[in-house]
Length: 226
Image 1 (cartoon, rainbow, N blue to C red):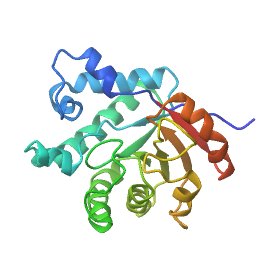
Image 2: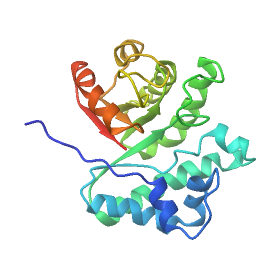
Image 3: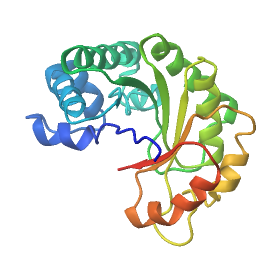
Image 4: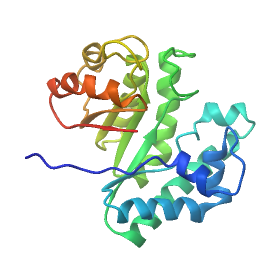
């Protein structure tokens, strides 16, 4: 039987539930500064519950999302804080790998790139540059199109760290990315880029169940999460 690696659970909604602050578009990023103990504590709880990989809480701290809210100056401090809190939680709770976070730059479930591929790649490279020294691997997550995933994986792979890629799927019909592309074509678009694991996330459980056989066919480790 192949080994199973447990990852952490969803950070955002659980932090919303525990916090006394009202959520805002940048809330899950601001909580790193405003309520760091909450973030550190939740990371530690996931490790104690058996998670062997935790992802830094910087999903919404992309340059583009921060710029929309007039908070681009927080980009570097938020990356550092996200890494520091995850590492502190690991020191407190036990061994776990720390994953850097490469998320959709503008918003989740939006398959069309709103800027060029090269500009997308350059922004992901900025994020990787801030995270690479503090993480053990990179998770490119909630990727809604082949091009978005290719840009994120390209930037992450340049760090020399292992890269996990997680696509998000359309909720209905045959298994496809939210862009309409098949899993096979999205995998082909990566060419020879190194991907250590392929996963699915942020889609209906039924969509994940239907797509897992195709994911397994690609070979290598596979996984899924909420």
